[in-house]
Length: 109
Image 1 (cartoon, rainbow, N blue to C red):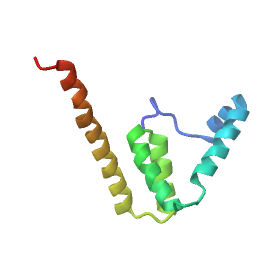
Image 2 (cartoon, helix red, strand yellow):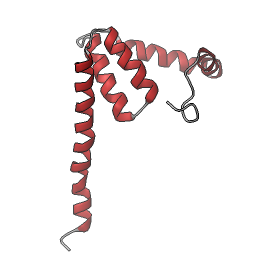
Image 3 (cartoon, rainbow, N blue to C red):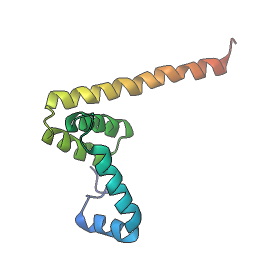
Image 4 (tube, rainbow, N blue to C red):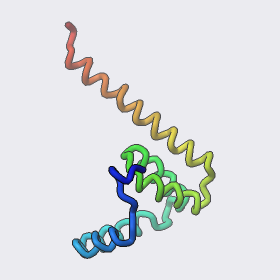
């Protein structure tokens, strides 16, 4: 990560974010904990989904955090990479699917 574009996630920055909007921070933290709590889906499955979504949204903080969390939840490097390849296919597939919009816009000309 480039320090110019993405600052290092530090305790000081997290504390500042919490100080500036404590209610929103607390609500987000509670939502996050609820979303990642083991339920019908296992922690490992939820973290593999998060790894895939982090790559789709291209959030470097999310990628690092969820790759680490997936590994802690028992995901292998191969499972993590497979989740990333599924993301790549979905992003490419979306471009192919959206080509129909371009073709429809062009019409029969």
